[in-house]
Length: 157
Image 1 (cartoon, one colour):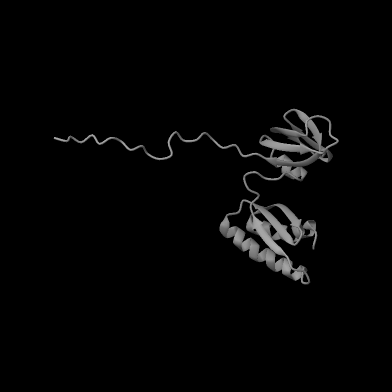
Image 2 (tube, helix red, strand yellow):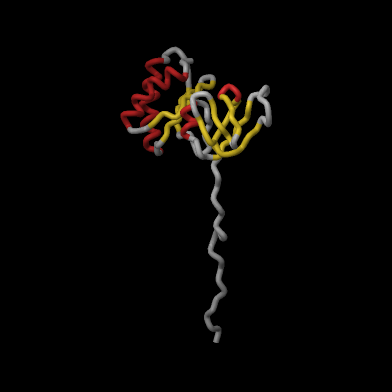
């Protein structure tokens, strides 16, 4: 299967023409997942058709499956650009086993640069992070999901 970097090189110009940004490309077995920022359902459909055609021309001898979607509310953080875009948000980080301190950290991503991040005041190099993602915080629930049935105040006389 073709490398995710090569797929990104093919897809980025197409997305740029439509005003969208490539968030990530993941290749898992025969599945190619293209994650696009700022796209609605119609956009994703068009991007999917265009991307499929590009990949068909490139990968003729292999069977593969294409998924085109947005990164979602809780998105994986894999590159320095991903981390930089998430500064100021709540994240969950799992460190590699040899890293000193707790392996699981949840907190605000305070900083991100070319060498690493600061999460909840703790500095981590990218080589110390096994996986990370943003955490979507749901707002307070409404006090009532449906209107209450009010007693009938009509006179019965």
